[in-house]
Length: 259
Image (cartoon, rainbow, N blue to C red; front, side):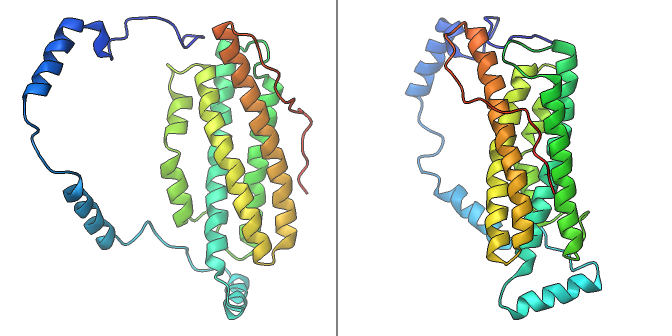
């Protein structure tokens, strides 16, 4: 596995590496008529038909306890739709579980490749991993208290899993180095922060202020994760480019407790 990323090599993906052949291909394309003179109207109609026939990606399971049934009934009498909150909690649980796996993979590459000046440390990676696991426990606890099944794959959890399929692929790919892995972690942390922000707004809007306060502590920790990962990646890119470093906002390594 290479420690660096942006090295010159035998990359033949662009047409510039074969000017004679690429000129012939370009000329032939210009001389021939398109196979279809229309636009994307037909494929749009096909997509619309599939959308009309689809039954969606799933459903929120019914409450798994009598307490959950009672809570759902009370909330519905108040005019709210509690299943939306359960759905978004399921999404966060799935994402935090995946986040734990991502940082386990990052630690494995750290052990093989080491770090760089201003790059990730074992303590920093382990701290974020433990935070992700703690956040998973927090959301699981919230689901249980609401009478929901924390093991269920909700629709939003399914969407989040499909949307982020590329992240575990990058982290587990042996060709991807630690800097590549940090790029995937940065994407995950950006999504994670936005997800917690939305969940907090939803919790407060539904009157779950105590949960919202605990979720805010998780968001505070996630904001620190984002700053740390961005700083590590920026230091690695700057070092490899031999560019003059630009001062970054300092990220604290002090753990953020969850209550």
